[in-house]
Every structure is written in structure tokens, then in C-alpha cells.
Image (cartoon, rainbow, N blue to C red; front, side):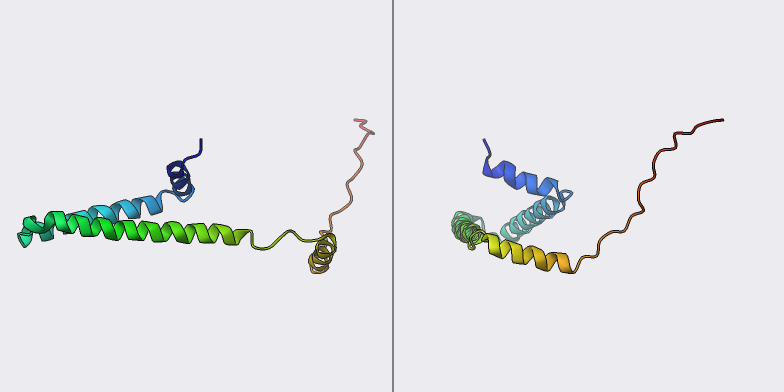
Amino acid sequence: MNSYWSNLYDSFKDRSYGGLFLSTLMAIVASLVLGAVIGLFNLQIYFPYMLLGIGLLAAAWIWRVFRWARARSREKLRYGPLSRDELRVARSKLGKGIKPIYRPAPRAPDTNLKY
């Protein structure tokens, strides 16, 4: 069964793990900064409320990305397939600008092998 998480990971595998590394690095740095701010300014009292607010913002952002991805997936198939006549015209336009590759004619094998 194809899951969302395996598809997400597969897209990173093809790009040499750069995006995965950067997103992990940003998450670690953000959590360190958040921990430092909480400890430095003595905000342990407000920590549950901060978590709630951050969670709500993250949920809203995830929902927005999800809706955006769904809208983009519907746009992919916006145009129907081309008719035969449209395909013929498109192929004729493609063929006009391409020069054929000139290769020398293949030589017949040498069968007179007298040494």
C-alpha cells in the first residue's frame, strides 16, 4: 500500500537528501531557540499556552498546504486529450524545426578474409 509518508520520503531520496537535511536542521535549531527563550525569560508558566498556540498555527498551516496541494492536483488534468487533427498539426510543427541526423550508410561486412 502506498502511504503518504513513503511518497514524501521517496521524493527526498532522489534529491540527495538535501531537503530532508535542511528541514531537520531547521527543526533542531528552532527547538533549541524555543527552549532557550523559555528558559531565559522564565516562561515555564506560559509553556502550555505557547504549545497550544504553536499547535494551532501548525494545524492551520498544514490544512492550508493540504488544500493547496489538492487544488494543484485538480489543475493537472484541466485540459482534455488532443483530437487526431490537433495531434497531426502539433507533430507537423515539431518535425519542421528538427534536422535529420546524417549517418554514413552501414558497410557490408568483409567476407573475403584471405590472409
